Length: 123
Image (cartoon, rainbow, N blue to C red; front, side, top):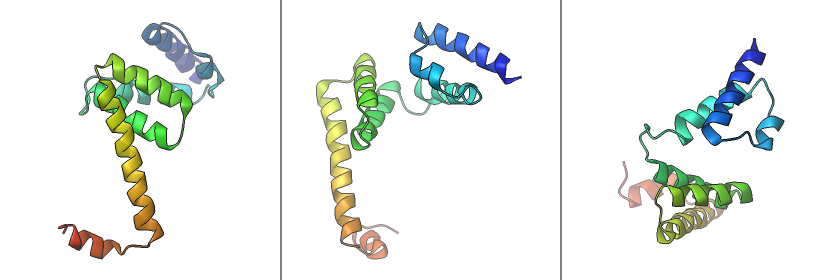
């Protein structure tokens, strides 16, 4: 049964991307239909809560932290294609660095979470 799903998925990837990247062919056949459905429904869709540019900037910020050169390259390209400026790209990466910086401080110094929330005006 999954062979049919796999073949349909490969055809859809070909149609959507204009080709089938080699990494797709390396992915386990049993998991590809589900993985592609997720990518298509979230990352590639323009009918989600976040516009494509924002999704690409978020993905780039995460990729910079992992780090993943493949993702950094493709997410930067996708963000530019979606209309992101160099300044927006730089700010997304800087925000990820700033978040990681403060996370390191809060966690490393074992800042009490309840006190933090109270001092920051939380509930």
